[in-house]
Amino acid sequence: MAEAVFRENKLHDIAFWGLRATIGAIFIVAGSGKFGPGFVSFLTGLGLPAEMQIPIALAETIAGILLIIGVLTRISSSLLSIISLGAIFYVKEASNFSGDGAYQYDLLLLAANLVIIVAGPGRISVAHVIKKLPRFLH
Image (tube, rainbow, N blue to C red; front, side, top):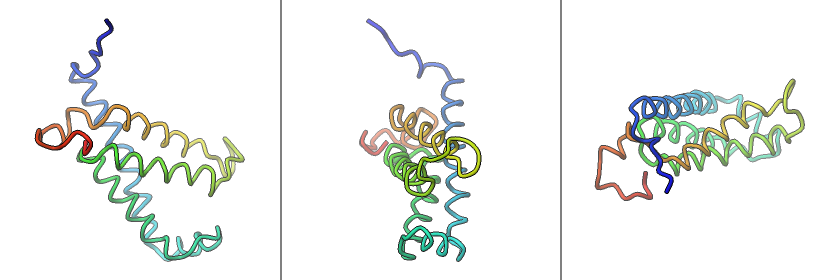
């Protein structure tokens, strides 16, 4: 029987927290930049209503914070995956993998979020410290 020894090494825990922290920091910076008035004109240029500015900016910022501290990580990564899919298919229209208007960066963020969804928060997280938290909230 195959056994996963991935979670037994402290270096793996630190590396996985580094992945969560990096993705979280990227989305915090991206989300906080979307609170400005320039993002509204970008949204209306795409054909989206201006009212979508606050939900998108809050989703990226709050989900990024939750990823860093390690609570609701699967839900946060799912939300960020949806945002990444929107960036790939709606904003950039999946037309160019590299070069101008490339979606390779968004695809990398999507892949990292999918890893976090599958692996969960890891041992360096608030969810691991609080044992009474239901598993679906990890």
